Image (cartoon, rainbow, N blue to C red; front, top):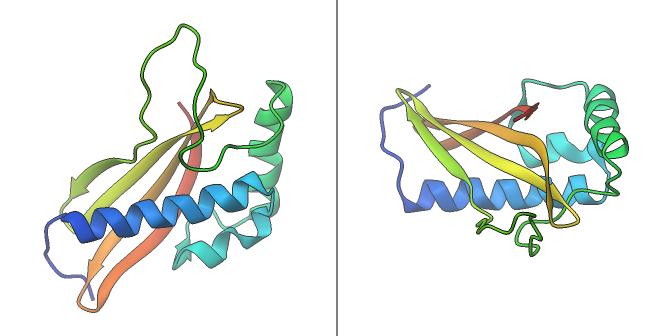
Length: 131
């Protein structure tokens, strides 16, 4: 059952920890372990996830995704803060994160949906989409 609540520090910290876990799994290319990071997978075909995002890495000459907090080497140089973007909606919020590899943006964005429930947050892996 969903309940009305506002995005606060605790919810943002929970979302960031979830992003860190997912990035660790992506970094290690253990795509089949993605469901262990969330309560539900909207994009549940981990073989398809592997094919899609590994293909993007291969096409662009990247080895693996960076873990959260790895220094970036963008050219032209600009400041990028490994940050999760938050977007509130009526029954929860979205958390989105731009993926990097070797310190470079890979033009893929991790999208998670969080729903407020009476007993806490429900985390849903939505997708990894081109930016």
